[in-house]
Each structure stands twice: as structure tokens, then as C-alpha cells.
Image (cartoon, rainbow, N blue to C red; front, side, top):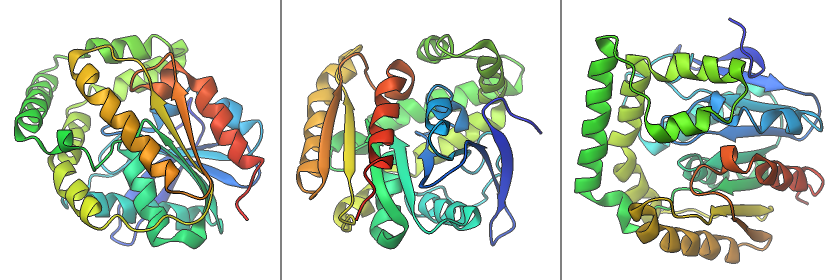
Amino acid sequence: MSSVFGDPGYARLPDGRRLHYVSQGEGRPVVVLESGLGATRTEWGLVMPAIAERTRVVAYDRAGLGRSDHDPHRRHLDRMVEDLGHLLDHLGEDRYILAGHSLGGPIIRAYASAHPERVAGLVLIDQAAEDLDFYYKRSMRAVAMGAQSVMAGLATLGVKVVPAEVRRILALFPPDRRAEALAEMTRPSEIRATRAEYAALAEGFARLRSSPGVLPPVPVTAISGALTPSKVEERVRPELIASHRRLVESQPHGRHVLAERSGHMVPQDEPDLVIAEILRLITRPAG
């Protein structure tokens, strides 16, 4: 099946599952993009074309999302990291530049800690931060998972619910990319896969917080959204930015960048900034 987001392909995993990915451009180092919670390759529709002018760039759908096969196992962080490793093995390069948004940040950090020889640089885009108590509050998780269950039930009945923030983001995309993204994200299976990722979030973050691992001595850039469009953001945003700064300050080649016109959705609100930071690592390979 073709995709307006790039040339499609499938990585076959050892357990028989397939991960769907799209690719644009040619060259090395190859850039691999890891999406946020419940998001797919479509998250990167405004970023990939510019990266592809310089090198090959790949975005993929985690298990159960987009066009990737469902995973019957619990979708905890270790499982996601393992799947990413199988995708990278399938792509066949020695080293990669990895960029991750939100939940994608901890995923690529965990992979880099376990496989430092495979990583040439990291770009963490408003990444989720396992050192913040926010992610462990049962009340927040209950509300989010309850809303996802309701959305999945409505979708099963043919009622497509698209939150206002998602509609705003989709309006930034060209019509063909918007249509492909919308067709997938309103499916019941998509919402259930998002809920599965959320259900195991705190468990995975707790393990990462207790055993964070050591990142390789490669360039590590953290991009933080600066805007606070909601009351929750007003409370959490300063702590999140501080966490991002702490992380890069602990790295020999760390860099912190503020996305002044963005809240959490930096890849859509300021794609040019994301592109610039990824291209910066392409022109400065880790040595």
C-alpha cells in the first residue's frame, strides 16, 4: 500500500510481527524518527521532506499503530525499545541519528544506552521525562485511559472523535497527508493501541528512572516547547524544561534549544527548528 509520507516498507520481527515504515531520500547517516505516544509516521509529515534533501530519513508505526501489526504483549518501554532495535537491524546501517518526540525521547535514549555503538547522535523533541512525578499520578492516568476507552467505543460504533488539538495539528498538513493521517487515527484499533501504550507508561518510566543507563558520548540535543496553552502545561512546563536542561548539561556534547512558538507539538508547530537541529547533527557526526 502506498503512502504520501514516503516509500513504504515492512520490517519482519523475530516473532512474526511486521513494523511498517516509510523512507525518503538517500545517503548517510540515516535518520530514524520515533513518534510520541499513540502517534505514527504521520507525525513527521512536515519534517521528513527537508531532511530527505540531505540524507535518508525513516519514520515508522509502532506495533498496533498505523499499518503495523498488533502486539499481543504488554506495550511497556522495554518492548518498544526492542522493536526499534529490530527495525534498525532491518534497515542495515551501522549507526543512526535518532530523533524522538515526547515518548519517543525515552525510547531512543534507552536504545542508545543499550547499544551505544549504533548511535551517532540524538535529538530529543519535548521528550517525556521519567524523573517528573506527573507521569506517575494515578488520577491523570485514569482520566486519560478512560477517555481513550470512550473514544474507542465510539469509533467502533462509527462515531469518529477528533480532539480539538488534533484538528489544529492536522490543519497544518497538506490535504493529502491530512487525509491519510485522519483515516488511520480514528480507527478503533488505533485508539486501543494508544491506550495500551499509556497503560504501561508509568511502569516503564519507573524502571528507566531507577536504571537510566549511560548515553554514549555523542551529540545530544534537547528541544523544549516554551508555550503553555493549558493549565496543566502551566504547572508542568517549567519542570519539563528543567529536566531537559539537566539531561543535556550532563552530556559532553549536550545542547538545549527552546522552541519559542511551540507547546508540546514542536514537530508540527516549528518543523523548521526540528529540521535544523537534525541537520546540525548530520553535518557534525560523532567522533
